[in-house]
Image 1 (cartoon, rainbow over the protein chains, first blue to last red):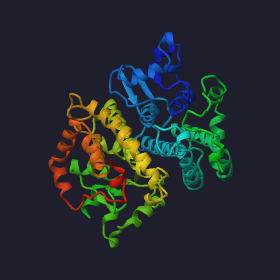
Image 2 (cartoon, rainbow over the protein chains, first blue to last red):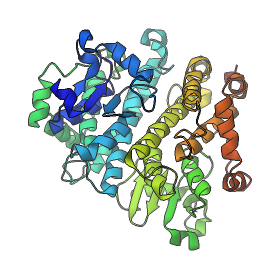
Image 3 (spheres, each protein chain N blue to C red):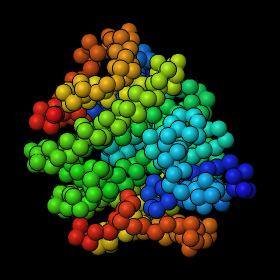
Image 4 (spheres, rainbow over the protein chains, first blue to last red):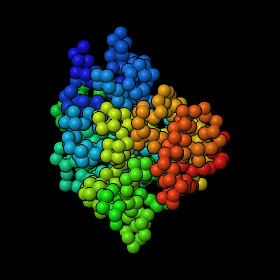
Length: 241
Length: 241
């Protein structure tokens, strides 16, 4: 397969955008081919079993605790922010020099902190219980999330964009793509609360990412998985005041 | 001040080990001087206000959302894992080559995932409410944590140490120091549940870190802050079955 020859293999669950999407957006914006292994037909090694096998250590290298997992030649890399720190300079999605690389990683980790809190707002009793088993608790935590935590994060990112088009200034980085995905997720999960926020610079960034030619083509393609009620961001109207 | 001349200034809250401790352990093991700015006398710019000022952007550079914050010359770096990724090669606490650096960062991020879950087990309704306002919820989530999540993480790290002294093999990295701190925290917060785990390699790693001459001296010093009920790891006996 020609994409396999390019050397980038992504392992992530088939049914949700989840954390895999932050990695996909980087490849898609860069226009660099990658194999989304689990989404191959099963006879070509696809299916969620491919992820399970990767988690069992069958790719060699460091055994990862969970996906997303990136295989590049013999190297196996896990943890979303770590994968993006590795890909950033290669895909020209962050500066080559050290200070810029750490600035991008800092922003990425803060975006992912927001993502974790958005998820936890709907699953306060932990990732092993279903939403249905923690509805009253989710109602309490989501109220705090939309009233205090989401605004805190959004106000922070909005302030960083004062006078800048992208988080690092003039050039887009993978952290902008991840911030875009976080904003998309919040707009999906908490549409009413999100619509109320006064965040003109963030809305501009979100539109600017969506309008990039390769991203626009990707979002319209079947490769882009829709949000749903099994993923990181879920729409439970009762949690959105 | 001579430590200021060395160039490393750490900004973190004065009253808890918290996330700042992961950075302190790296400096202490390396024997590299650093200024723990908030713990200086107030007349020398210390106190928690120093952290508040850093969060307000007064250090210049990227304004961080929260501590720990490291200032090195004119560079300001935030996010625990990002700070350690920056310091790792400088303090000889991870390999210089790229694959090794990403392996260390991957482990660090997984250790910090465990730390977040340990904290959230005691604060399921989020970081803005006191423990006293979420005791029944904490009881439910902590039960899942000690029964499923903590064992999952510990079993994972235990398996990585099969045949290796440290996470990356023969040489200690900052991820081992962070894993040590996470184990110390779990032993403090959930002593009964932690004592039950069969994790001989992890206990050996914990003892080996504590026995390193500079770490041993540090742990016995006043620089080492004890765990307490304001930090990441808290001891609530009712949550430890």
